[in-house]
Length: 130
Image 1 (spheres, rainbow, N blue to C red):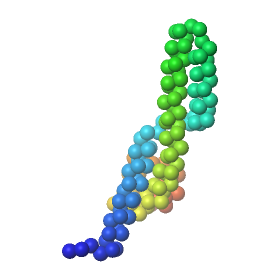
Image 2 (cartoon, helix red, strand yellow):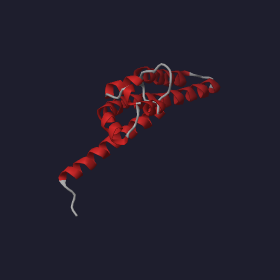
Image 3 (cartoon, rainbow, N blue to C red):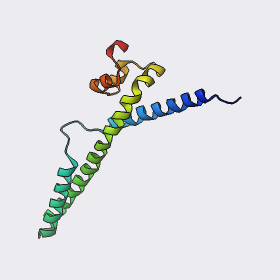
Image 4 (cartoon, rainbow, N blue to C red):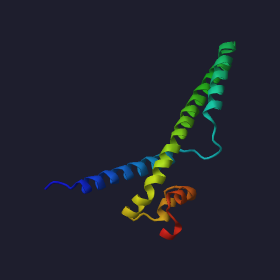
């Protein structure tokens, strides 16, 4: 028996909602606590370290600076990924209420999963849904 267009649309909507929620929750798991460091500042640090490495005559100091540069480049990758997190959060906010209602997910469950209260508020999910 063929599916109706409405059924197909409902399935597609469910997939979009599930994908948005999953990607946001995965992104939450990759975030680090503390004050964020901007990608611009990290790029400046990497460039400064490269110049210092080129000018360093002591091979041990140059080695340590190379490790510091590698660490700064890794932090830069994380910071750039955090910028993408804003789009994940926007998609989560758009789909979370419908997903939550459809799946019976409570406010408390979202909070235990690490979703900030402010994000839930913006998504329209209130404590009354506990």
